[in-house]
Image: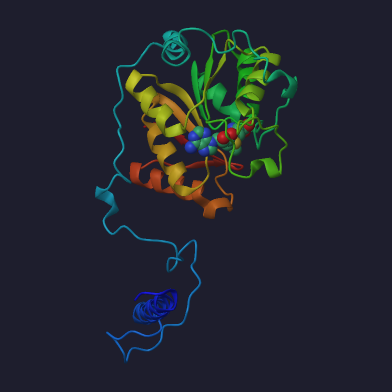
Length: 304
Ligand SMILES: C[S@@+](CC[C@H](N)C(=O)[O-])C[C@H]1O[C@@H](n2cnc3c(N)ncnc32)[C@H](O)[C@@H]1O
């Protein structure tokens, strides 16, 4: 009864039904023809975009004064005496010993230059002027790169003071995306050896007792310093230059300034990042009732 030819006929009929059904379902779900909105205009086909453009890329917060944008911690921990800061920082970050012990590690040695110091406005007259005025014991530097400005301050301090100084260098030591297009750094598994080259520079210049790296983001390092009661007499702000980064750095930095201390930074007039630094400095000064003192490309704010 069900011979091979009969079976073949059923198979063909079944296949035909299957094709017709899938064609119909495709038609029904297609974006071109919709039976729900049969009068709707046909949407033009749009290739998928990876990044959706926002109207102008900027969104305004209406009442920003009550948001975290304007609320910063202004009181930090009980002040640690300046002479104890180094031990405290080494205990908290480097298990109680100097990160320069046994430096450099074998894996970095082949890629390190004995001395490779580069910076931007890192030896301007502002450094000497402010060191003379403040006579700092603790300096906090936000943004260090290869240590040009830190090494310059340490060199000046050595010739100017009898007292010991300590410069805490906060930097994630990652540079910025694409910085290696301009500056050649050997990369090992995503690590560009910036921290090690900075440390090598410090070691070559004999400042391992006076300069310590804090290899973290500026905001996380400053939260910790605030918690621990580590304050500075002089704070140099020279990390990221976009408004929001500079704004956070300036606000958090100011709370770490000792009474009579000075905060200063680079790139006050630069047009980079839509004048992010200049706008952040001006806004901060306005809200705190401070006067901005420009010095070349540098800006200076004195504590009240
Ligand atoms: C302009 S360079 C500092 C130059 C240095 N002050 C000098 O004059 O020699 C900026 C540095 O800030 C660091 N940096 C940028 N944003 C940072 C962030 N949010 N936290 C920590 N470091 C940051 C970069 O890694 C870079 O080394």
